[in-house]
Structure formats: C-alpha cells, structure tokens
Image (cartoon, rainbow, N blue to C red; front, side, top):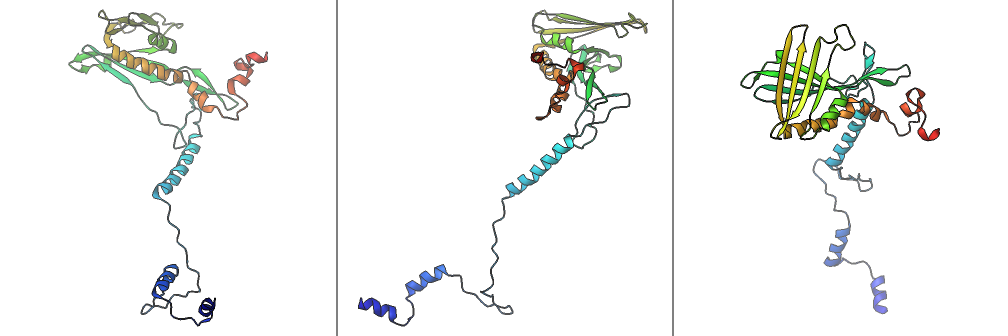
Length: 282
C-alpha cells in the first residue's frame, strides 16, 4: 500500500519508452510546420472524407433513371391516321414509331419464296379507345428464277394468308395437304377475272412440302404457275414464325399492353357493344 501511494503522489516523471510508444499509437500524429505555411490549428474540427461509392453503384443509379425516362416515353401512343385508321404503338422517342420491315426468304433452283407479316389496322373511337378494323395477314411472294441464283421479282406473284389459313398451315401434318382459293374481286363487277390457287402438298419422299401458286389473270391474259419445294427444316422455321406472329395479327398484343393493374373499365368486358356482360353475372 505504501508503495502504491508513493507512486500516485510522486511527481510526473518522463514516461518509459514502452508507455510512450503505446500512447503515441492512440494519439494523432504530431503536427509539422512547413516553411512558408502556417501550422494546423488543433482546435478546428477536421473534415472527414467518406469513401466514394463504387463506380458500379453510380452507373446503376444513372441507368435506373434512364429506364424510367424510357418507360415514360413508351406510354405515349401515336395519333390516328388521316384515313381514320390507326395503330396504337409505342416508341422510345415518344412519337410515332418507325416502320420496320421483316421477312424470311427461301431460295431454290426454280423459284424463291419470301414470307412477310402485315400488321393489323385499328380505328379510333370517340371515347379515345381503339377498335380492330382489319386483321393482319402474312404475304407470300413467289418469284421465278431467271438464272443461277437470280430471280425475276418483276414477275412475282403474291398471295395473302389470313389468320385462319395460317392456322391450317400450322396444323398441317407431314403427309397432309391443303388448298386455298382467292379472288381479289369477289363480290365486285370484275369477280372471276383473277383466280389464285395455292396448293401445299407433301413431297413424294416425305422430306417436306411443295408450295405451288397458280395465277390466272384474264385482265392481262396471264396464266402462270410457280412452285418451290420446302424442306422439313424450312417448314419448321415457317411454323415457328407463324405461331409467334399470330396473336399480333389478331391485334391482341395492343390489348395486353393497354391493361393496367387498377383499370376498372376492362375494355371490351365492360362495354355492352362487345358482348359486355360477364357470363357469371347473368
């Protein structure tokens, strides 16, 4: 006890090197005076520098804002066309979406076949909604060969497949065949002057189908037949494209895009003009 009292009451002496090292490790580094500059004031609060956010987080924030900007631009639809028909579409630029042309071609020795979809048409109503006025279709273009890998597209013949005819081609089996007849002037004064017949028949060896288009045009005294063999692989590609595009040709994609989580009107279901009452509400 006496020894401890003496140590506590004795005047402060120079610390030992070991204690000095320990104290210096917990204290701030000594301030150094530079020539030509004033020393730092220990009483002033120093500014704490936080670590910067990683670059990936900063870029994520920017991309998130760009995403919402794009979603707002997608929400604006196009105005009705001058002929009264229009197609509600969405564009990243906020205006009318540009036209896009796509197609798939099959080239053989005697002919070439190009398959292109055509969009449906919509008519604007007084309520601001849109109504389907014409279903889309798939346009087949047959061009005869004019040489080796050369085709005369000036002599091409076209045939428009309706959604029902597309369904027939999708359901066609390896040994099945089908035939479609078109008269562009049906119900008009020139009915019967143009006759188009498209036959799809299986190849003899079962490796695919023949597409044969016969056109009789009495207006220009034309009688031509163009055929092209389509292999199983090529027919599978056509069927895959038909299955994908079919709901779009019906215009159902525009209805699906217009559905909102809190929309109580429910479009066609709430309007009596379209068979409005629910079955279970009767």
